[in-house]
Length: 297
Image: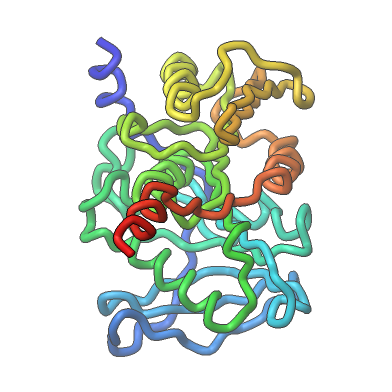
């Protein structure tokens, strides 16, 4: 019964904003062509890429010393029907953490299975393989550019998003998990959680969510606790937040609030607090491999 509920609801996506028009895309290159950026009064730069012949865009905040100092990176993904501009206003991660590079990417028109079946509104692919993996490729292109042009701290790369954007954050956990130090999706879940590698995570859910049912998100939380090897009982971490520790260093924090599907205004500062506590561990060398090497000499 649980899997049926997940399959029915996995496609639920929040409607949060409107799209913006962009110029005609330049000719495609491989893997992506980066166009000249434009800076707005808010300190955000609009940059464009051509990925598989399609122009993609993002609003990015760069700290002044991002080219010379190891700098964390936060990706923030809007919900279905949203935009990078709307995500910047809702999440305002660049104001909460001005020392970090913050990336708000624009989705593309995407069909929804329960809403927007004609795909007139912007969104993100829901699973690997859909829409030719266009959004995973876009993410790869953006991260490649950031690493090329700035001094990215690869131990401190994070992803957060709401609704469909939270679902895409969970997809990044599955498909690009080794890139990230931690994740913070809200109003979302994934039916593929059992295949995730353990990672620090924060899940945000409204008890009266009318789109992504709270009961389904509760099951997602329990699944993440198992994947991360968390203790069954948690302790208070902040208002409405519970910390479930893990001996493996992959804790889960839940923020459960008495609200609807609307993104809670308290979330951004708490997400930044959580992200600052999480640094990706060094990849451990295989002790057996060292023993085998010595034995072979």
